[in-house]
Image (tube, rainbow, N blue to C red; front, side, top):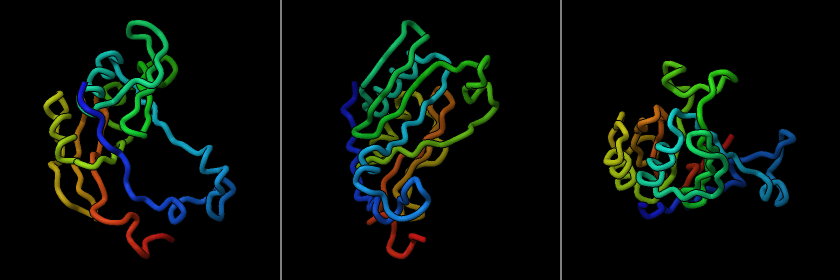
Length: 165
């Protein structure tokens, strides 16, 4: 398994996040209970988990089920996401079944060049090479399971001064 990437970035949450009641900054209690962990629906969930381990250095946090009928929580540094089998019967489509992509996941890392290269070596398709744009060092890939990713890091403090509205 590849070494995990460091996902710590200097983002000032007090400047960019409001509380669940529609205004003001998050309280410490809100911050302790707030997290977003996307679930990626794929064909061949076991192979997808192996890809994320190799490409991103992901580690398994939680796993239930057997064979291809699994649900797995993965972590890359402190960032977490889930992988589960697609299930068209209940409307959970993988990107191929949806005939496109419905989202893109941003993986923030210390070295986007290295992580993008590892992902491509593990089987991802590069859709935009690593470069500097909009204040980020960033690459775009599509993994072998049709999921679209941006791999990047801010080039300076984020968000830039004056961008919070």
